[in-house]
Length: 132
Length: 152
Length: 138
Image (cartoon, rainbow over all chains, first blue to last red; front, side, top):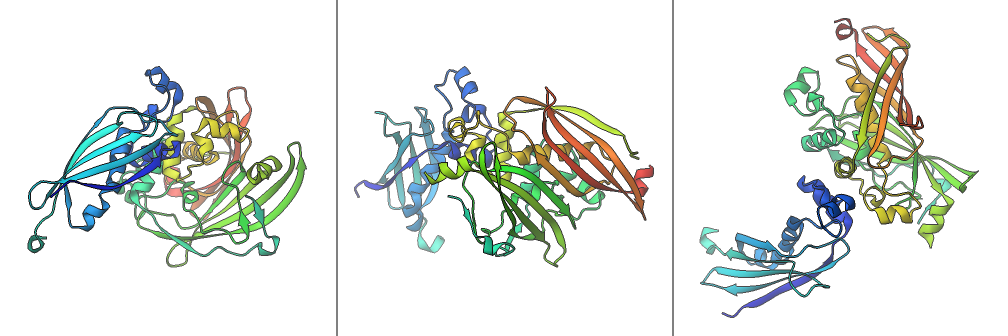
């Protein structure tokens, strides 16, 4: 079987996203909402939570869940910061590895950047019908 | 966008029910820096005579009603002038509270910011058995500047 | 038990950006004027401001900490008079206006005020609280 591309999506990350994510996750680190503090930490301004980008990757997986695949493992590396106002493309390629396993490579890239902000890999497994 | 229909004053919004969650009460109490253990510890709440974690006094404002008939408020820039709560049977975790809201009064006044529209919005919340949980009165002010800005 | 003219507080608090963000999350009020400087300025504000309801909630918390055990709010009204910016220091205080004995409870009427350091009021309000007499005596 050959690798296939999952439907990608584009999202503009807003300051409101960051505030909502802070509240939902309990991560109230000021670098996500306080420009002055962010600058004191050497950042260009407030930045998105890495875990927000990682969490949004889940939207890519909907077709796999529909086909009975279940997420077994996911790991990512945060490579570049994402700032509110940036438009970001979420994409993934699935590579069948064995009968019921998919290795999915993940990419989050800002439209302005020439390298990914987040890269990673997920492993999906589809249990046989009897055991599901 | 801001407008209102004066003929619909007094008309209630469709009832909207909210399940009162412990986590929401704790988060709200935490956000206000509450130290009182009745908001966090169920044993303490029961010792104080509540059936579950009680909601702090201004918590009812976080239970949104359905849209008020005949009123469209701008997303931002409205001024909250005054707020009142009258309390009935306390709201506690596990309760289901049904809220509804209505426009009670509209005044247009000339002030130093140009013409202002002053709306009185009422809200109430009922327990499942019909007991009143709270009634709230809000006065909100929409300035001419905001009306222009949102229409532009 | 409270007597008329009893002074409550004062207590000094500092409203931080974190508290405003936490309040947005806990209340579900994600109006950008509370966390987005640019948007706040577009609406003619000097920058982000605290939620009026946060100020009202903080004044309620203050009254609770000053109350005898078992006290409950029966009625609570405030008027919002001024905006609060992050990192502003606020002073909350109250005064007992009247106390009435009604059966097995007291009703106490209290005026509360939250001020910035130059004395300008941020909110002024009134609360009517009920206190069971049993706990009030102890």
